[in-house]
Image 1: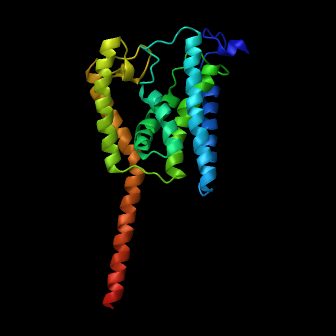
Image 2: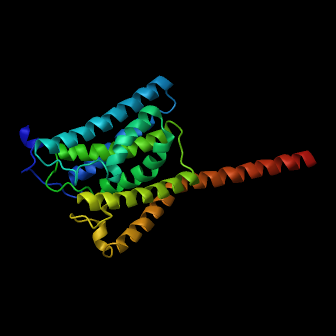
Image 3: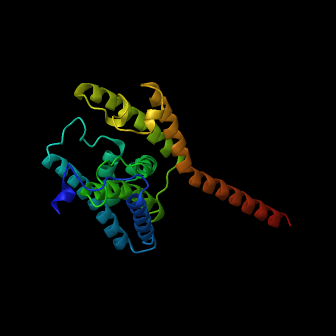
Length: 254
């Protein structure tokens, strides 16, 4: 059992889109679908589910920090919860427990967008199934993504155009703050001070700081895609309302 928690794991490494990767994604889809079935349940039941998800996010992420600390790999340059997904995991716990809409706006756009990208291309290296890191990674990012969907489908939350721009502006302010913090402590949170040391999509982009513009554009496109279902719904509702109003006027005129 100890080997499955070892830092220098000697088992099978993680394989992108291998059997273990596909299995994890399918398991998360099943979990997400099962949780959305809570829609229509009583308020106490939905609250218990939210609290359980929030506590799970906190415990799972805490175990990740404890594991790194035990092996002497916890440091302020890499382990502070300042990456987008890391900070959203902690904040989403509060969103779930207290039904916080402000956090929901960021969890919907940044949580779904960031977690989905990471789940498709996780940086697990040597930590394949059934290592602790394999489960911890997929559960942390998977439940982060599912939490935003749960609040949308089950609790009836939804983003607006103002939400989209609040998140976009808020993240740009956060990026500027991270740039100065990175400069001060020698870190690279959000990768705003340089490209990540591990292979990533950013490697295909121009050198710093030009790739940041590419990331901005990619982020905006992601936000728009995530908002599109609501944009289409609003457009359909508006047309339906206009059609009903027109029908009423015709009925009155007759």
